[in-house]
Length: 176
Image (cartoon, rainbow, N blue to C red; front, top):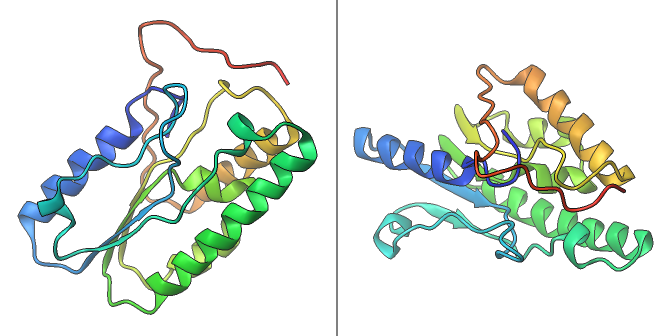
């Protein structure tokens, strides 16, 4: 976990590549990141070869804080994202994946909660995930909710890594 531009996605991709080389377990990827907008976000940059032989789920996620024009629209977009993610989770639960990589789990927490995601993943033996945990997006109610749910999830994880902010300077989007 870490701030915007801290390298969370690339660190997760490196772990994925190392894991894939080391074993023949059934791997799934749940990529919850939106497409990159204003240098924020971005899917895991897999090669086509890396996607072969894995269950790759990437629901269309709209970044609420970047595209929502009002609190009401932000909440609506977050709810729509949760519905898409819940559908992907149902597909995942029906699979035989024993290892799961999740890019940007924090997107789920804009409307979903940590306990629900934890229950959805409990049958998967190994889960490697990353998520936003920073100050870039300010302290809106959605950001506060996201942070609280990330903290809930951290308690249940065996290992939590905090990636330091990008050394090129701290980014600040807004203060709301």
